[in-house]
Structures are given as structure tokens and as C-alpha cells.
Length: 480
Image (cartoon, rainbow, N blue to C red; front, side):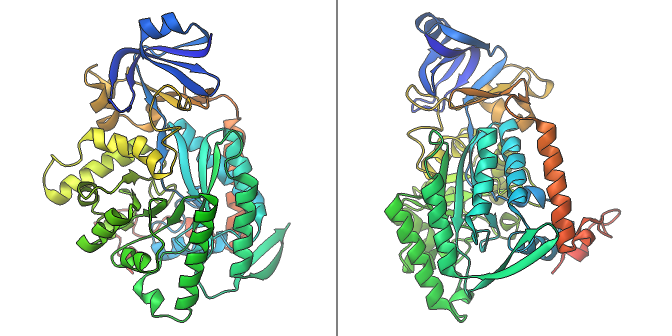
């Protein structure tokens, strides 16, 4: 007797055969898939305690968002699009302006957004930029983990150290009273190890921890403390290797991959985000070392320079898609990022043949799972894998006529078309409504903690409508 039978839907399995089953079903026992196939066959062999009718829907593996930032959900539009003001908010919030309550509220908000968009596995860097990590004390990472745990999705939380010089000033709050204190590299490293010990592969393997260090660019190597920065990167990478963790770096661009190779921190368990402006040599380095890339097609970094995704793929490099959310101008909707990815590279080549929709669908399902070392469990619908399943409602005007479902879900669907979500065989979203949490309470907590953070840091000026918001062809205030 199965626990759940999802039947009568169009299965888009992303399995090795890339099967599309027109009248298909998925049977679930406990937290695992036990059968995928035609409805008549699966229903006959696996009668179930609960039956979910997926008529008119696509049955798919949950999406994998391979790069996003914890904390950003409560900062989103601060600064009205100006990068300098945005980073001012990030720098303040992630070092001296946030509390454990802030991180808990933001984790719940971001995980709930992912859930409603069908993202069952997501990466969250515990901070913003490539070097603003809230790793002065385990309390902030604990609060984030507990927030995600309440929602029930699967998460890989990247924790790490900041770029020299150290110590860095952090602050804790008791009511309206602020206490500043210095934090060394050793203190941040100890926090990371504590979070790994406490959370990695816990809660039925839904929570994982990855390690993170700042990306080193040529100007970092020419600045004081360069040798210290290199040594610290190697130390964090060594811990990741010893513990079997994914090692990440954010914000790679031209020249930085060569530096990472020179200091021996690349490899099959290394995941580099953005990776814009790479030259042929750096593409070859990624291929030679087995290093994985996460492309964020909707990020500002992809406006400033191009990630050579197609060239990386043709060189044999594994590339996944990330949302880089929830940042100034983007959400956690992976349908949006698939569509952006296709148009981005086709525009570059002036050629619509690049990046067929099936490839981008792979990049945010099975390829994302591979990049995170989780492809044995998630990323496709196959017997033995975790029952992370989403139903996408295809019976909607923008998704008709009812043919070629594999095209419709990539070209035309959006996150609000997700109807039902299961993680570990548990129904977390039903008929577009979360079933385990109070959505209004989460939204209210997020608003409360945002307002408190804005007031602590004196950021009210960053929530005013920019002077050039209306009536201009270009906002010259954004030019730095």
C-alpha cells in the first residue's frame, strides 16, 4: 500500500530517458518514490491511502535553485536600484543591524516563496555580496535553519568567512541597545564548524551546510593581506573536503577562475556563481578540474558581463541555474529565470537555436541537483529518489492549447501556476496554499523585522521613490 498516488497527469520525469508520459502517475511510500509510469499500471500495482488527481497538470521534479542569498528577502528594493545604496543596506544588515529574529523571519519568507514557486531545494548564502557573512555567532545561522525547517523545504546553507582585514565589527542588539564587538577569522571559522556539526544532513537529510569564502580578484592579490586571504581560502576549502561539503564562491568574473586554480581550490565539489566574462583558458580550467558553475541570468552581474554558458556546456562543464534572489529586482521564480536564460544567450548570438528549453529545464532540476551533490536523491522523478514532486496547473489560458507540455512549462508557465508541492513525500502546498504554516503570520513577521532593521540602521531614505522613477528614458542617478 503506497502512501500517496499522484495520477492522471502529464509526467515530465527528467529521468535518464527523459520520459514524458501523457497519462502518468507517481507512487510514493514514506519519503521515496516507488513507481513512475502510466496511470493504469502504477495505480494497479500501488493502491494508495491518499490519491491526488493531477488531471490537467504536469507532474515534475521540484526545482533546484542553485544560488540565492539569505537576508535579501527583507532588503529587496532598498535603494531604489542604486547599487551603492543597496550594498550599504546589505553591509549594515548583515553585520550590525540584524538579530536572530530577522534571520528567522527572512528564512521563513524566502522558503515560503520558494515553496509556492515549486522550488523544493535551494541554496542560501548566509549573507550578501561575496564577503558579508553573518558568521560571528551560530545564533544567526541557527535562526535561519529553524525558519527553513518550519516551512519544510530542502536547503543547502552556505556559511563562511569574510575577506581580510580582520577583525570585522559586528553588533548584537538587546531591545534598542547595540553592543559592538570585533570578530576574527578564527571566530568566524569556529562558527562555521559549529553550524556544520549542528545542522549538516539533519532533519531527514533536508538541511545541508556548504562552505564559502570570498572570491579573490587581481586587486585583492595586490592589496595588503593577500597572503592571508589565500591561506584562509585554503583553510576553508580543506574543511569542506574533510567534511564532504560543497565549497562555494560568489561573484566570479574574468581572471578570478585562474586565481582560484592557482591556489588549488577548484574541483568537482566546488561551485562558482556568476562566472561572467570568462575567457577560453578559464573555461578550459573549469572543464579540466570538474568545477561546477551556477549561472544567474537575471542578476545585475549578468548585465555587466556575460557568463559563457553555452561555451561552458560545450566544453563539458556542468552548469546550473540560480535565481540570485531575492535581490533588488528578481524573485525566486525559476520559470522566470529559465526564460531569461534562453533569451539572454539567444540575444547574445542573435540566434534562437541556442539553449533549447529542455536544456534549461535540466539546468534547474537534475543539473542543479548534480551541482550540489544531491542527484542521487533529487532532481528527477525516479523510483528510489526522494519524493520531491510538484504539480503545475496547465489548464490556464496562457498554457493552452494542450500540446507539447515540455514547451509550455518552460516557455509560458510561471511560479504562480504551481498547484501542489511535496517534499520528502509530505504535501506542503495544496491548491496553491501552504498547509503547514500560517502565511499571514510569516508575512507580518517579515514586515515587522524589516521595519526594525531599517530603523536600527537609519535607512528610511532608502525606501523613498527615486527622483527619476517616472518620465525618464534613463535613471542617471544609477550611474556610478
